Amino acid sequence: MARDITEQPAPRLDDIDRAILAELTGNGRASVTAVAEAVHISRAHAYSRIARLTETGVLSRFTAVVDPVKAGLRSSAYVTLKVRQHAWRELREQLRAIPEIHHIALVGGSFDVILLVRAEDNVHLREVIFDQLQSMPGILDTQTFLVFEDLDAR
Image (cartoon, rainbow, N blue to C red):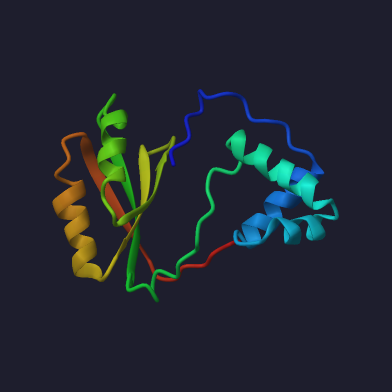
């Protein structure tokens, strides 16, 4: 889900909110009861806090973390893009439509966009980069950084 930084300001979070977020980050399948017990609040209080965090967009979705190698995606790379000025909005939707792209970030620096691309193997990865990305009219240049080892920091 893309975040629009022009949206409403972020709600203020207190220590209980941060503790709830830490619990759910560690186990997105945790029940409200389990979260309440871990954070030392009532179930009703945990339920209302989680509902507020969801309504305000702090919690945007609950998801599973998939091991890419075990899922058959043995080749990964970070791909940086230099894009034409004013091409971002159109490119953003084209990039989101490519299933091999797992993360997209608009950044500042010597390139404009960084992508995490996961593929079955290097041949598949090459096809995504050469045939799909480099053929997009708004992309001026790409640079590819192969991932040798993936570590989840959370």
